[in-house]
Structures are given as structure tokens and as C-alpha cells.
Length: 145
Image (cartoon, rainbow, N blue to C red; front, side, top):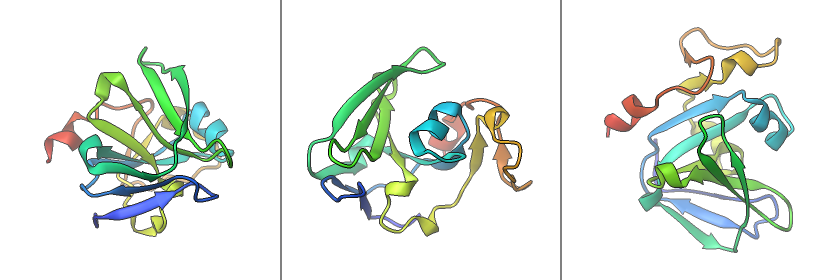
């Protein structure tokens, strides 16, 4: 995956740069991502926190408890409402960048569908992309680095 890459919120009050290659990229079909995006899924990239920098703005924070029991920390623009990143203290070395906020998201290779059990019935899924009913153990993706 090409680095560096950048992105931001819809109004550009928040801008970020990623300088390290993502661990994994996927489509999440959980109902929380469906509500967050107002769509059928959310596109996410797990990147090393050490390679993520917020270049402009100060995000607002919303916290919620995930099915894993971990507290998820979502960072979003207080002006336009765009959620740019997520993460948890349990995995502080990983920042989840939401793919719709990338300046040029078309290069992102989708490696997995997660929470596929919650996918909308009409959502097509390629047979050659890994499919997980719930959240997978992403360790194998992290181990490749």
C-alpha cells in the first residue's frame, strides 16, 4: 500500500497523514458502522499509531463499549461530524482510519469483510476476499510486518 497518504474530514477542519503501511484494510458490516456511515458498511484501515499524525484541528471524542468489552474511542469533526479515526486503549499501537476520509481511497485493497453476519441481504461479497461472521483475530495481519 502506498505511503505516505493523507485525508481529512468533509470540511477539512481535520487533516491527517499516515506514513507507515497499514496492517490490514477491510469492510465492516456491523450495525454500528452502518449507523456511523449512514451506509451499508464502513471501510477501515488499521495503521500503526506511530505512523499516524493529526496535522490540523482537534477532534471531538465519543466513546462506546464494543462487543469485545473494550472501550472504543471515536474521533470526529465537531463542525461537519465526519468520524476520521477509531481505536482503543487495549490496542493503543493501532489506529483505525476510516477509508471514506482518505483523499484518494480507490487504491485501498479490501482484504476482508468483517461482521458479515450483519451485512445487508443485498450486499455482494467477492468469494476471493476473506469473510468473517463477526470480528476476526487480526493477529495474522499484524504478524506479516
